[in-house]
Length: 112
Length: 114
Image 1 (cartoon, each protein chain N blue to C red):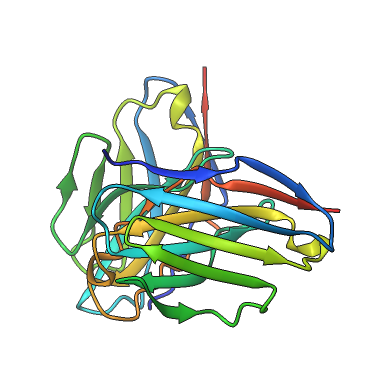
Image 2 (cartoon, rainbow over the protein chains, first blue to last red; image 1 turned 90 degrees about the vertical axis):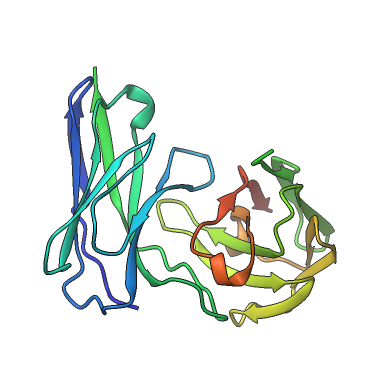
């Protein structure tokens, strides 16, 4: 699996968009970008994933650069409840030996 | 119902005790996972079950013994643990191994070994 690099921490003002970057310069053509988050003392929560097109769901948007070497998770209107560690994971979709490998992630602190 | 439940929420056990952690899901998922998470670290995979059969054991010490008695239930039996085994133990599930990148996690059991 390709390695990902994320900043260790970021701040965002409540109500503003939070843009979380992820570098994955060694990503292969069949690897997807997945985002999870973990709110303090809870289990991780799946957010979104994509291959090369931008994706949007009720939680967030995922923007993947044309060369697929980096991506940005966008929370359009951050709230205090979005304070969490956000993990960017690059994985082949499917496969029999499925292992999610979490990196160190980005701690997003949403400030009032 | 998109919930994975775990019991107990907290567990304190001595090094000579035997205890079990329980995980349950009713989403019809056929892949279930155990992760271990130490403080301020990311989750680390321990075991994967697919269709009630052990698929992956990440070289976990034998003092941790998983069991999947049916498609909805996953247990982790604990015996002769060490203080360094204190951690948050997370259970997760996915539809199958093939869709295992979208995993639903439970809230975890916080284990303290004294």
